[in-house]
Amino acid sequence: MFCVIRDKTKFGVHVGSIRRVKRTVLLISGLVFCIASYANNADENKGLNGQINAAFHYLVQGDTSRASKLLAEQERLKDDNHQLSKLAIMQQIELENNDRAERLLLSFESRFADNPDTFAFAADAWRDLGHQAGIFSKFGFYKKGVQAKLRAGEVGPDNAEYVALRAGASAHGSSYGADASLQKTLTDRAIALDKKWGYIAKLNYAQNTDDQQSGLAAAKEAVEEFHDDFVVLERVAQYYWTIDNLAQAQQTFAQACEYPPAQSWYREVKWINACYQVAVFSQEHGLAVKPGEQALNRLLATYKLPTRQNVEIAGLLLDIAQQENSQLAIQRLNQAITYANDEALVKLATRRLAMLD
Image (cartoon, rainbow, N blue to C red; front, side, top):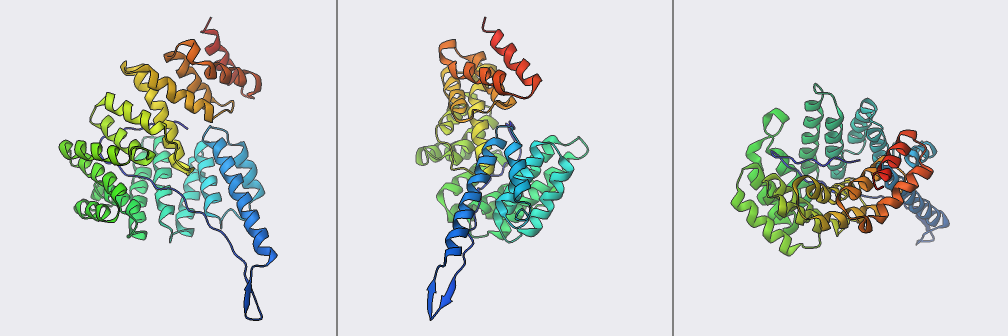
């Protein structure tokens, strides 16, 4: 699921997911007892969350099998469970079933309209659909993505993440259903609410207003203060890339790659893309090779399925690295040849290995 996008115009941020736990409580003789059904439900919910996370781990590698199996097994729960609903949407996007994904997204936004994370997630999903859509459909999906960001900030007005998201989206203006005049006010609101998201809002505002002096100052301060925070580092790297400071972008993407975020849907995708981009800078722009080698080896140590995505990662590592630094790539290609059910993928992996001879 590669989607490394440099947005030179308007940039928004994404937030993670929220989990729910159901509780059953029985009142007996004036005392509240947590009965066995509570423990059972909690265990079941914990087990379900684990299955969802496992399915997502497969999905981000381009394997939809676990998601399909789990969604079939949990058909009755799917419409009431926030995480299962996300999984169903991402599965359809991965399968490039845009019409089905669009219907699921609209239903998701309606059913969970009181949760700002709904719209933060939907914003990225709409953008993914826009990337996949035909030329005449792209704008409609992108507009829905911007409107989802705006809605996230409206539903979560006291949360700096969502306010920063809304502030960045406001810059798109009236053609996207936004009000650009609100961007500065919302940016200041995010800064007042939280330092981390305040930096991100500052970077968005600097990028959207072409204020490079303020952007560079915010980027430097943000990295110094949040040197081990993936969300901040990835955003700073994107900013450097946008202003064509490629060496600094590579360095900051490499730093971001060292700090995988806690599992959440699109943040993990962003982490994969950040690590991959380090190596792309090595290959396409003649920048430092060692950070690219390290980043790709980190990905291959994390993702081990015989999928096209992992074969592509392995192939890029072979392109930029000495053979002694690409043993994981060779291992992943051999695994694809042995275990992949896709004949075209087996041939691709075989060709890549043959290039070593």
